[in-house]
Picture: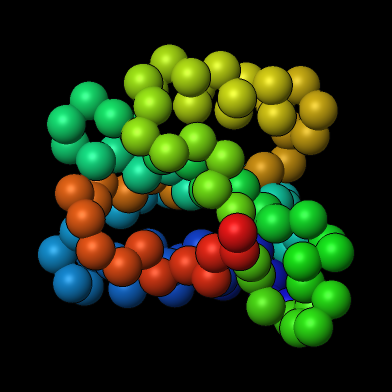
Length: 110
């Protein structure tokens, strides 16, 4: 699996290159930090994508898979979840992406 810092840099660059606003909101461990993607839908709603459980990656352990934790909720709910994660594991990354609709560029499991 790619280092977290390299994966994040590529994700941010890819979105910025196609005109989306995408930034690193929190830096984590460069090698193995978990990555969370916060999507601002530009209408007061936010979604949060978190790393998928290891069991979901059984077929392809090299891929970063995500699952949607929150879909179009208030931003306070997402912030609250990230505060909980910080108490559990402070070495995680947060990518903030502004996207009304379209392809996130993530592999998402159900």
